[in-house]
Length: 86
Image 1 (cartoon, rainbow, N blue to C red):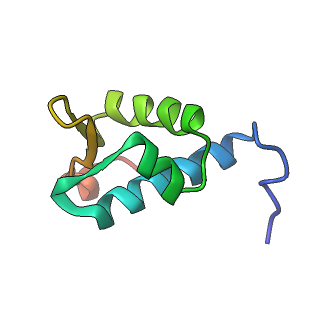
Image 2: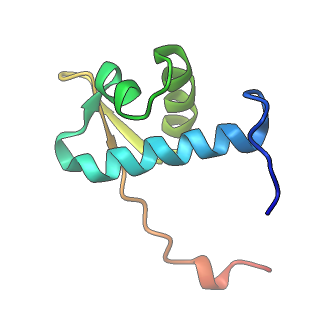
């Protein structure tokens, strides 16, 4: 196995953190979670969680409900994954 997470600035580390955010939000259901609770559950500093959430929002993998300030999983479907070039 390759060791990749020794440096917090490692791009692989960022991918793992983003995946953790997506997993926790998926488990939270449609109600979603606020930044504070999400960062606590993922054991990430709020600034790190906020930065990663901004990227995930930009990629339309998450939704943010302005009225509640909660983030929730966008439940993107990958219908065309088999037709993608390899």
